[in-house]
Length: 88
Image 1: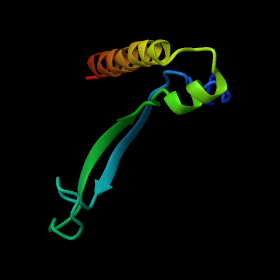
Image 2 (image 1 turned 60 degrees about the horizontal axis):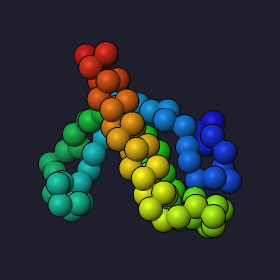
Image 3 (image 1 turned 90 degrees about the horizontal axis):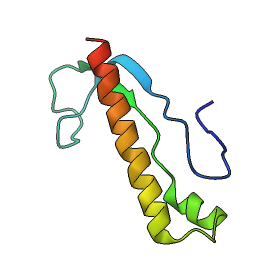
């Protein structure tokens, strides 16, 4: 569902909201440091797979891949923040 076209490395800008996920590691990634797990909400959105874009579209320059990838990344960040604003 999340892939616009799995062959091109560009994905939908669908967000996945995962509420109340138990976290067992501290900020440094160490396990067993927390007295008990804490619950947090996560939002996940796909990134552009630049390697796939480059391999599957050899006619596209690296600069163009970076330009499109950066635009899609900014769009994903904007969509994530807008989603938060609409749902608080």
